[in-house]
Amino acid sequence: MAVMSMMAALAERAAPIRRGLPAVQRTASAVRQVPVLGRVIDWLRLDFAGSVVGTFFFCWSLTPSLLPRIWFYQALVTGVTAAAGYAIGSLIGVLVRFIYRRVRRGHRLSRRTVVTAWTIFGVVGTCSATWYLFGSARWQSDLRELMNVDSPRLIHYVLILIVSFIIFTAFLALGRLLRGASRWLGSHLARWVPIPVAVVTSALVVAGIAIWSWTGLFYPWMLGVANNAFAAINQETEAGERPPAITTHAGGPGSLVTWDSLGRKGREFISDGPTAEDLEAFSNRPALDPVRTYIGLDSAETLAGLASLAIRELERAGGFEREVLVVVTATGTGWVDEAAADALEYLYNGDTAIVSIQYSYLPSWLSFLADHEQVDIAGQELFDAVYERWSRLPEADRPRLVVYGESFGAVGSVAAFDDLDDLVAKVDGALWVGSPEWHPLREYVTENRDPGSHERLPVYRGGETVRFWGGWLEPLNVSDWEPPRVLFLQHASDPVSFWSPELIWSQPDWMREPEGPDVLPHLNWYPFVTFWQLTADMAVSALMPEGHAHNYGGELVDAWLKVVPPDYDWPEERLEELREMVQSFDLDDEGRLW
View (cartoon, rainbow, N blue to C red):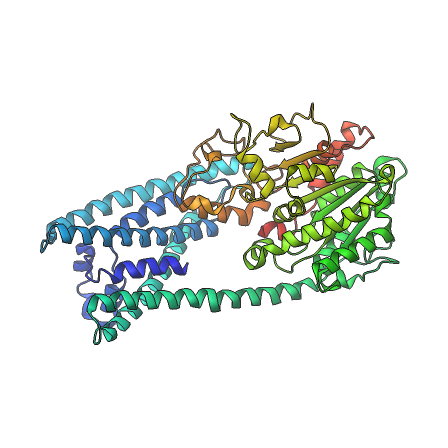
């Protein structure tokens, strides 16, 4: 944000003479007689090139992306992108004017030319903005119909205009403040150095101070405040949650860790699982109490210490004696998807063990910004500790070893492996759900996909080991798929899976390919704008109905059946009932944030 403001400030600093809209100047001439209002009008006078590019960005921001957006997020996207467009346009205008004045020395555009340019821009810009606003209403309605979401009210589009204008004005004002500071400093430096040197030096000094204030002061302060706030939240316990009464759950009778040490997300995960009685009622067969091992961040000083404690707790609960052992890398706050855990436990009638550790108090998006290496270290430490203990078991007595990760956790889950061959040599299966674009193995497979396959659902070596599944809307063929199976589950409309910083400057292949079943054909790429659109989409991606965006729910039942199918052949009606049970679980705040 500070960079965009600085771009506008530097652009306007290099061209202090502004030719604003003459009609507006004449209309406001009487107001300018009042000193304060006159200064405000002059201060906020717009640059022509910046206004043109800013209008382009405004219109582009209203085009559809992957998800329908609530009015506030649309206003945020529109305000920020319009400000960025204005900054870029102002800089372009400076370069054009500089070249023009060098070529046509002493020549200035006539007042008539300026008036004509502003008039044409006013008419074309107003018509374009109006057309895109009406188009946005149509596109948003189409998207909401695809995903069975309520359509916005008319007042929301009015709010979009008002709030986006406020956001744009705030960035413009910040840019003008920086410009004023640069001019003030330049006027003092000009007493001792040549004017061009004073202009450049003052601009660089102000830019350096602004960037340092953000990176060295405000940004670290924000992260510190967030860490303290989420650390306090980590101590909270949701109403109705209580220590488990079964010995196979962490924090229960005989556990090596206390209930309070699990943290908020750990207590949620431990308290919500089914017991043997629940499983028997569903399957009508004898069941076991599932093993759920979870170690909170406060239980050890290092991640290696947390992993070591997790192994001892897993041994105590009998986790190495189960049919399936799943190593889960949690998301930022330590959240483990209840739907994924319950689906597996019901499919195996409790003959399962799930182990995970907490590595941060922060939500995934903040954890990524603050210290994204923590998730990799946590994933590697936990898996290596489990694998070392698992390898010492007689081969015939080993449980099926599986790795699981969702969202940010999928990135940490793969950190324990050097490459695909290393993964296949160590595990009996891997399931990664809604993994980010920078997931190393996914990135490698996508870049080296078979000729003719798409980036969105790539085919690698004919699907011999790794396969991609788009969910219920896109059936997956599991024939000729020998274990160990590696599955990426990612919806075509999941922005978490397709967001990338590279969207700022380049169009990805998946946007050139045929769209997914829940993506509009009107989806286009625009520089910078598409990046901010998908950024806003991520914030609401888990709030979409099941089967869309970042809400996978009952599809996790089918995902487990594809990766590690149990020996028992479940009747289809029981599987459908299980899907409905899993999809009814409410998503946690962590999923809504990332």
